[in-house]
Every structure is written in C-alpha cells, then in structure tokens.
Length: 383
Image (cartoon, rainbow, N blue to C red; front, side, top):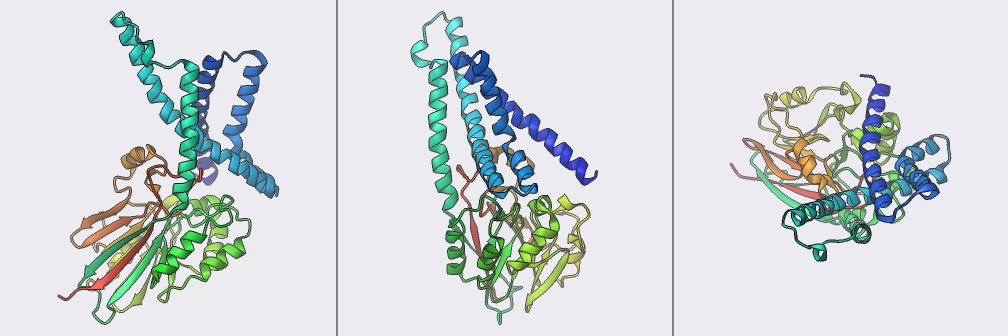
C-alpha cells in the first residue's frame, strides 16, 4: 500500500472514530438544552470546526501560515483531550442512569433522588473534565526518573559501570512551548549519562525555533555518545526533515546498524516499520553478528519481540505506547502491546524496558500515565 493510500485510510478511520465522539456530544447537548433551529446549526458548525482543527493546522502549516497553524494546533489538541475524557466519563454515567431508570420501572419505585437531570449530568461531567485537564497538564510537566540497575557478567570488569539514560516519544513540535524542555534537560544532566538514547518519536512536527532546541539537546553531555532510532512519527513529519533535526541535535542515528561503544558492549538500532522496508540490516542480522560474550543492547521504537532471532539481545529499549497517556486508553493499548510499559523478562538473560514516554502526543496532558526518563546502570558482575 502506497504512502498516499495509507494516509487516506488513516484519515478515514480518524474521521469515523473522532466524528462519532462529536456526534455523541451533539446528541447530549441537544437533549439537555433543547437546542433547535439556528442554535442547533451553530452547534454543528462549532463541533465540525473543533473536530477538523488538527487537519486545518497541518494545512495552514503547509501553506506557510505558521502563527495560524500554531493557534489551530493548540485549539485542536486541547479540544481532543477534552472530548476524549468527556466521553469516557459521560458514557458510564449514562449507563448508570439507564440502569437506574430500568430498575425503577421494574420495581415501580421512585429513585429520582439518586439520579441527575440531563443538564446536571452535562454540567457535572464538563466541570470534572476541566479539573482533570488542569491536573493532566501538571502531570505531563512533571517527569520522574526511573532508576534501574542491571548486573551482567558480559560487562567487562574494566568497564565497571555504564549509565544509559533513555528518553522516548518526546514529540517535539509546535506544542513544545518555551520552558517545556527545561525539567527534562535538567534531569538528564543530573543523571550524568555515559550514553543518551532516544528510542523514537523525538520530533513529529515543525518547531518554532528548531535550531535553538537542537542546540539544547546537542549540549547535553554523554561521553560515550548520543544515539537515536527512527519512530513512526518521524515518518509522518517527513523522514529527511526528521533525520536533519535528529543529527543537528547531536544524535547518531542507528538505522539497521550496530556500533561497539566499549569493550564488550554493542548498541544496535532499527527503524520503525512505518516507513516500509527498513534501512540497513534487519534486527535478526544485527544481533546474529554480535559475539555471544558481548552485551547487546537493541534500540527499537515499538515494544515487540522478534522470536525468530537466533541471538537474543541482552537488553531492548523501546517506547511508543505512552502507557496510554490518558486513562483509560492504557487498557486499549495493552490489547495491542502487552508489554506496554516497564521492565520485563524477554528470555534467558534478556530483558526489555518500555519507556512510558518523556513527552506527550496530541493533548499536552497525562492522566494516570506519568511520563518517564529512564536511567539504567549496567554493572559488571563477577562470573
């Protein structure tokens, strides 16, 4: 399937799913406030405008209207977060009222004192979601550090300890407001990484001052190097633009490549499959070429295990899932990616760590799915 066809399918699915949320809200507002005539037409127009705002933002950006595109991006994604959470809260509340009304009829009882009117229902959900949006914005700004220690006989005694700091899914773009990177950069500096790695989706949209942002990332110290792999959103942005930014930020891209960074320690990285046939060697070919007594670290955007590998990695670092980012979407993510977050065994002597995402995609909020910077200490273990 060609790129244009994939985008057409994505757009059709997006409009169907996202449009159904707006239809649900339209019906609820109309029934609660008895909206008719011109008021109803105005409501439909406003909801259509909000639903299509992310698409309008992309079109405005392509046409060179940077400020208008920025404003439309903020409107579209803030609204996206709001309506997603609204529907997630409103549907269970509607279910409760339907069940209460059914039982009320069955038992010929008056239970109106434990039920809300349609307007009270709407008002309650609307106010609660505003509070959750404020909390979610605060939670997204706080980036906790997850500390992990891994002992291995494959790490030479002469090497001692190697500290890897992993960021993932930073999603730098038009919603990267001034000061957003500050806490993240400070946490990385305080961790004092030997190796800094981005496991995909470092950038996925046009930045207002890309040279300055790239310079901030480039200035981060990492004596053994900074490395990155390509995620799905780099392809959405445009792979050449994404590569240019990633390299200007000081990262070495591993695209079907492996590199030895210290005695006995090999890093390997592969592209996300979104771009079609990945560049360079396959994951299986890369790992098969690593000597058995070397510690192999695989950087791979999606938390998927390739069972065909003859030579299993010792550690895989991935991201992509955001752990759902906004509850309850983590429950759905878990159906697609069972290893959706955290530290997991991946076979004899192998482990995979799935970063919850350092930034946010779309709505700049997180609900019960905090972001993460991962610090992994590889320490030599005597045989």
